[in-house]
Image (cartoon, rainbow over all chains, first blue to last red; front, side, top):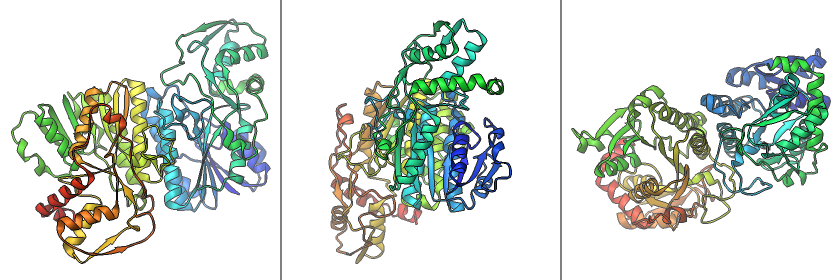
Length: 318
Length: 318
C-alpha cells in the first residue's frame, strides 16, 4: 500500500505508522504537530519508504499535494477533546467535520480510493442495547464530538456511494497503551504522581466503559482493510468486556503501589455529554478473524508503566 | 411566540410564515432570496408583527442580530438540490452543515431556546424496515444532502444536551402544494407544458415515494412544538401511503388531460443516491393528534393546479 496517515504523529497514528512501515508499506505521515511528536519518527531517518509532512487538515492544497501517489488514507487527525467541547463549539465542526470533508476532497483530487476513519462508540449516544451493535437503533447525539464524528461518517458513506471510494468506519472505544496522553488513566496517573494520598474522580465512579489496547486496535483496522469488500464497512472496535472507573482506579493504584483517598465529584456522569455506559458489540470485526490480545486490565497496567517510564510525556502535556 | 424562520421566503418557509402570522405570532422571515420570493410577503406590508430580513445563514452576525428577541427558530434554509449534490460537494457542507452550526451559535448568542429543523427521510439511506420508524437501524448515508442533514441533526441534539436548547427534528418526505417549485411534479409539469406528447422519466418509473402536502406538514410541526416536552424530539413527517412514479405521472396527465409517450432512462434509481423506496412510519407524530388532510393524489393534483395558475413560477425557475 501507499498510505497517508493524517494525525500520523499522534498516539494512534504513530503506532499505525510503525506497523505499516514494518510491514513494508510506503507511508506519508501528515500532522500539524499540535499534539503529535516528531521524535516518534527518529527510527525512519533516511528510510525511503517513509515521509513526514507537517501540515494541517484544514489546508486542502497541502493535503492534496502530500497525498499524491497514495491509494489509501487513514484519517486519524481530530480534535479528541470530548470533555471540553462545549467550551469551544466551533472546534469539533472545523477540526472534525470540515477536516474530514477536506480529506475526502483531497482524495478525489489526488486519486486515493480508500479511506479508513477513526470514529467513536460515542456516536451511539446513550445506547439502549448492550453490547451495542453497529446497526443499533438510530441514536440521538449527546456530545459535539460524537456529532462531528457522525457527520464525518455520513460524508464518507456518501462519497463512497457517489464517487466510488471505499470507506472503513471504525467506531472506537477509548484506547490505551504506549504514547497514550489523553484520558482517565493519564489524568489519574498525573494526579497520583503529584499527590499519592488523594485522587479526585469525576462522577461517582460507577461509569462503565470499554477500552482497547492501541496495537489491538491497529490489528483490527488492518484486518478490516485486508478482508472488507463492501463499499462502506462500519466496524465497532473494542474489548468484549467493560470495567467501572473504580476497577480501573484499583489497577492503577496497585501498579503504582499507592492507596489514595478517593474524592468523587458525584453524579452518574463525569461531565455534560459523558456517557455512563459504553460497551460495543464487536462480533462483526471478530468474524473477520480478529481478537484483542490484551484485556482491559492489561492495557491499563501497560499504560501506567509507559507513563512511569516516560515522564517527558507528562511534561509535554503539562 | 417570537419566531425567526430561516428560508422564510421559500416554499415551506413562506407557508409557515403565513400560518404563524395568522395565528397571531411575531415573525421574522430571514432569507437570502437565492430561491425565495419577496412577493409572498405583500400581505404583510405595514404589519407590525412581521419583519423581513434579507440575509444569509452563513453570516452569523446578521443572523444573530435578526434573531434578537426571538424564542423559537424554524431553520428551513438549506441547499435542497439533492440530485446534483455530487457536482458541487462543498455546497451541502456549507449551506446545510455549517449553516446549521451558525444558526445554533446565533441562538446561543441571541438567547433563543427552541429550534425546529427540516431534516429529511433520506437520512435513513436505503432503509431495511418499511414503514421506517425514527429508531430504525443506524443507517448508512447514500447522498451528500442526507449526510449534511444528519450532521445538522447531530449538532442540534448535542446543543440541546450541552446548552439546554430544545430541538425538534423533522424528517420530511418530499412536500407538495402551492408555491412548490422543485421536484418531480415540477419537472414533469414543465416538460408536458413544452411538449405534451412526450415525458422523459428518470429511472424505470417503479420508484416508490411518499409525499406530504405542505400545509399538512406545517400543521404537524406546530403540533409537535405545542405538545413535545423532550429536549430532543425526532419526528417523521409523511403520509401513511406511498405511490409509484408511474402513479404520479397518471394523476398529473389526467389533471392536464394529456397522454404523453413515456421515455424511461432505465434502472431502479433516478440518479446516484436516489432512494428507490421512501415510506416513513409516522405513528409518533400521529400519537400527538396530527393526521394529514390530503392524500398524495390530492397533493399532486393541487400542485399541478397551482403551477398551471402561476406560470410566473416556471419562468422564475427557467
